[in-house]
Each structure stands twice: as structure tokens, then as C-alpha cells.
Length: 337
Figure 1 (cartoon, rainbow, N blue to C red):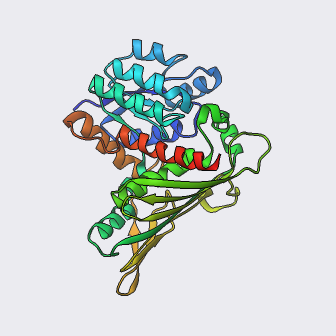
Figure 2 (cartoon, rainbow, N blue to C red; figure 1 turned 90 degrees about the horizontal axis):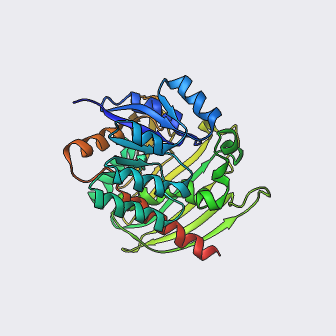
């Protein structure tokens, strides 16, 4: 088939440049245009990637023949752009967390339904080979009844957003919140998927250290799922520059018959999973390297998204998934206030 023509909406974000390498690794997509109202950012992107660039995304979707829009705008602006693209008949991929509120995300879901287009958000951790192995083990009952889970995601410093032309991320009005809003949603979505269950209760605490911005630096939460599993989250923007790969990541599930633990390397080529059921063992995974954001995870996600667009069916991660993750974050923040 001919590649699906993609227009990128918004470049003042940490991920569009890395996604260009991800799209280049997937033959089903071709990025042909980008839109950004900051002229310096726009011109640099156009030089580096040789795509047509527009100062306004509305002009881009008017003049380009596109099949999909990939949206990387400030979160508060994502619903307007996604709804307009859907009504124009474009499939839409919106970078997580999709919006600055759950209501904004649900408005995008409704617009996509009405337009009969695919709406998806790249919670790409679902596509990591280790995560898939953990889910299979949980589904098979190897761990017994899963009682407790842990998730830690500490990534970078606040100032990386300023250096990456994304200072809006540190303005709660534009971003929706701090690390729990921007990073914690990854683990919230992942555990919803791993447990195949929904969060029914959430309590949290935020730690605000910086004096410059109105988002928290650290966020902690206890989530209770419908079947009783409790998830502890530790999410922050406080990893020093010297930390390997700039991220401190951890996942664990504890059941009545066993435990699994994993410290992901994010874009590494080797991963070690600790599994303790009848007896402890380490399982090594050799991961095929891929350039771009999140390596093999994003490539697998994009392949699955293309299949949905071409063949139909449910998207690999739905807009509804994105909205539900934001509902959980809003419960956490409401308990803090």
C-alpha cells in the first residue's frame, strides 16, 4: 500500500524530532508536513527533516493531502486541533496525556466517533516485549491473585523542558499538571492494561520543591483497582543529569503465588526480568535496537496503528484509554487539594 501521509501538529515538545526516526522505521507512514507557530523552531525542523512547514496547523490541514495528524501541542490546545482534524476526516494520534483535562480528552473521543476516524494515544509501554511477558504471566495465573503493584518513573529535571522549547509543560494551565500528569499516566495506563482492571479509588501527595513554576516536582499515589489490587506510584522530575539514560524506572507485581520485578532501561538492547514463583529466576531479553522515541515500543505501536487505520478494528491504544488515565490523575490531584 502507499504510505499514510502524516502531518505533525506542534513542534515545541520533547518528542517530535525523535518520532521522525520512529516514523522513518515504519514503512506504513510518511511524514510530509509539520506546523508550528514558533518560527525558529519551525525553520530548524524544516531544515533538518526536509518536510513542508506551516505556521498554522489549520493551514496545513487545508492545503496538504493527509491521512493522519500527529499532535504534539501544549496539552490544553490538543482538543481543538484533534477535533478539527477528525472533522476533516483525518485519523489522529495525540501525544499523551492528550489534553489538560479528562473532559478535553472525552471531547476528542466523541468527535472521532462522530467522524468515524481512528483516535489513538501512544502509551507505547504496552508494546515492550518484557511487558507483554509480564501480562502473559499474570493472565496465566502464575502470580496467583495480584495483591500489590509498584511503579516508579522519575525522568529528568524541570529545566529539560525549557531547553527543549517546551516551557509550557511547567505551566499547569497549559499542561494540566506536573510529573503525575505527564509521566504517571504511562504507568496508570500500563497497569490498567496489565491487570485488565479499572481504578476505583485514588489518594495522592505532591511535593513542590521548585520556586519558579506551578507544577509539583514529585507526586506519590496509592490507587485501588476494582478487584482489590493496590498500586503504589512514585513519579517525579528530580533525576540528576548523571543518572543512566536520564530515567529511574521500576515495575513490580506481587501476587499470592509469585512476584515479578523489572527495572527498564527504556531504550536499551538488553532487559532482565526477575520472576519468583516456585523458585527465583532471571529472564534475559535481547531487544532489537530501533532509532527514535522509545525504540522498539514506538515502532510496534505505529505498526499496530497503521493496521487499524487500514484494516479497521480497535486501535492499539484508544482515546478512551487516554481519557480514563486522565480521570485517575484528576482523582489523585483532587485528593491532594
